[in-house]
Amino acid sequence: MSTFKAPKGTFDLIPPYSATYLAVRDAISGPLRRSGYGYVETPGFEDVNLFARGVGESTDIVTKEMYTLTTKGGSELALRPEGTASVLRAALEASLHKQGNLPVKLWYSGSYYRYERPQKGRYRHFSQVGAEAIGAEDPALDAELIILADQAYRSLGLRNFRILLNSLGDKECRPVYREVLQGFLRGLDLDEETRRRIEINPLRVLDDKRAEVQKQLVGAPSLADHLCDACKAYHSEVRALLTAAGVAFEDDEKLVRGLDYYTRTTFEFVHDGLGSQSAVGGGGRYDGLSEMIGGPALPSVGWALGVDRTVLALEAEGIELDIPPATSVFAVPLGEEARRVLFGLVTELRKAGVATDFGYGAKSLKSHMKNAHRSGARYALVAGERDLAEGLVQLKDMETGEQEPIALDRVVEELRAKSA
Image (tube, rainbow, N blue to C red; front, side):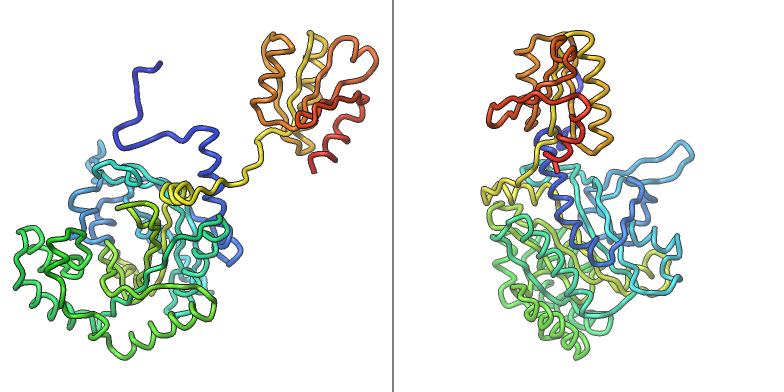
């Protein structure tokens, strides 16, 4: 065994378990690909200031959880802790917003990194699929993204998730609420770090999960009571569009999300089968983020769904995805001539689109057939010297146990028809 292990708080994805992760990524991205979202991929690390400015200096992500490094040239970089700031930076750098046809609709998939206390459902390296719609302020866009995430989860068979929804107001009404909230929070008995947060980003205090803090927040001024008419109308339209689409949601006044850049619509997907780490994904509108990172005003909305958390949600509901075997046909050669002939057939079958594997190494028929069973293949293609002399191979159905001879020149055609 290797003396090296995966770093603490990380994990390797290996077959056959990894196939579930691929299926989940496909299921989440499927509705996006069918709705005008193009794929974007960004580097695993960025200038540290992109996240300090974009995610927010007061967030735990930036103050405690970011992996930072200094390059040999003296540049300060950070492993990306989330996807939105990177995707928006890439869109701005490529001037996608200047090519007309706003919003720019993008989806992405990748690994993200946060230095956290490792526990089930919360690792230091995690995988997300996300979507961003950049450059348009329209309640229909907010609703579209929530509906597409709902569709993705339902396509996986998930049922026991809830969508929490809130509005955080905008640059007109949020400052007024912020002041009222600060006045209320300053009168509470809170620790020093939380008191510091009151001055930097008081809405984050509402998100504090500690029971002793939540007890004191009873009677806190409500953001809904301080929304301006424009924000109320916008939120009402998002809610109406979701309801018309048959997407159930719960209004949650305390939902603020953990990033500083959100405005107006904010939402979270939670699954009650996951214990304390119940959030499986979330997002919202971030109308001021582009300006925060040096771009023009580009109102935008997006979300990220955790692949790891979604897999845990599937396990919690006892859902096993129907993942077809990676191999349809397994070729078993008996003897040198058979190795040469069958290897050629394997190459032809693969070219014809039939997933095929080969019995490597000088093994007995019994050993080869064990490997054929382990591969999950429906058919085994077996040939020895006598078969080849007659221009045949034996085709064995691994489910029924039935075996039939097939002419060598008919193998590709027959198996392509059976695998279709």
